[in-house]
Image (cartoon, rainbow, N blue to C red; front, side, top):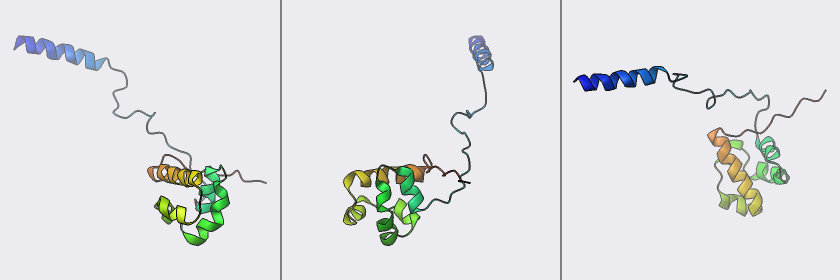
Amino acid sequence: MAWMQKILNRWANHVSILPNPTPYSSRFFSKSTPYAVKVGIPEFLNGIGNGVESHVAKLESEIGDFQKLLVTRTLKLKKLGIPCKHRKLILKYAHKYRLGLWRPRAEPIKA
């Protein structure tokens, strides 16, 4: 039992010198700045860029709702005549948006 006490005491000494005993690091849980723009299909596609914004009218007329665009599959986009590169970009950024990893930038208000 004495050897166990020594181990526990040594372990307690090591634990007490660890920096920042908080369970969460601010590096992983930073607050993002609030967006002034409500995200719709045009804002989403303009945020992606790379020519994807040319499909705004087609997607608004066929899909209509931004939430439906977020769950649209590649076959539906293919049937609408959207090229492969643009489909990949739309699906990639839709997935990032659903996970909360990406949002389109708010355009600065021009005075």
